Amino acid sequence: MDKKQLMDAFFDNQKPARVPVGFWHHFVSFHDHYGYEDKAVYDTVVSGQKRFIDEVDPDFLKIMSDGFFGHPAVCRKTIHTADDLAEIKSVGPDHPWITRQVAYAREICEYAGDGMYKLYNIFSPLQYIRLRFEEYDEDFKKFTALFREHPDAMIHAAGKIAKDVNCLVDRLFEETSMDGIYYSVQSVQDKETFTRERHDAVVRPLDLAVLDNIAAHAKRNMIHICGYFGYTNDLSWYRDYPVQAFNWAVYSENISVAEGKKIFDGKPVLGGFDNRPDTLLYTGSDEDIRREVHRILDEAGTAGVGLGADCTIGDNVPVSRLRFIRRVAEEY
Image (cartoon, rainbow, N blue to C red; front, side):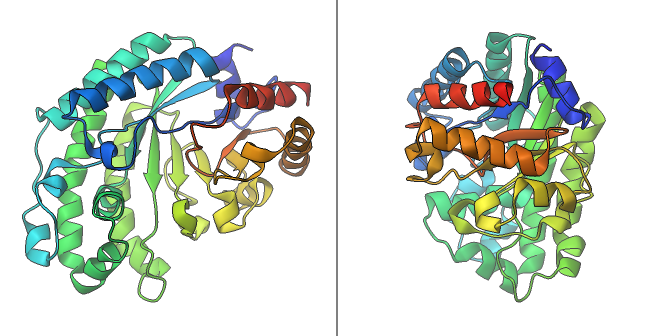
């Protein structure tokens, strides 16, 4: 199988010639995730993504959106109040935040060529708000506090962002050779007030406003249920989201690849390795890695299963290690 046939088998929940492998890492620091207007940041991301393609030769390419994490209306000033949230407006399809992402994605797609599937990293509308608060403002309480106190303002703001995300999605598929989207979500980390019912009432419609548009363009899409920093989610809340494959934090959620595949009604899943520093991926011997690959696949099978990590891995994981995991998968 060539790489596209390999991934077709994965997405179609069949047994491929070997299990596909997908890892990725960031190219700039957290604060620079918002720096698309800085030419040095932009150029670093472009060159880093191209180098990753050359060195790793991935089975499929998740195109990182480093530099574009911050929606312009969220980044205009530091948000503290409901009134600040009310000032968030859509910026429209011709704003540099959209046009430069399209130009970046087009350049990477052309560099990668047609021999592999390319999936662009996009966040849910609420994630664009949460990430700005936590990564850039370094305030880990503001998002849930504002959501609890001013839910209507938060939903209104996220709705405005969703319009721009859909503009981005439309232009990506119209103007690049993108094959799909890697859509990142996280449940509101307020277990007392955010029940399944409330998630379905206020969060799910925002997600579907984007995911339904993505599904109208492409059928090779993956959802990432983010467990970074040890956050947890109820995976079942996302079981019937309109995507073809699922990735989650096996170690944050304490739900194995095999268990997750059952939760998602047997649909394709990708993961298995802890992305945190000083864990097996970083410190294990080749034999440790071989045993872990065998353990994951013995439990989960190989139909609609891919090997990857809970989230982005460190750029200090040697390329040779990623290639070794693929070789073990092939041997298996």
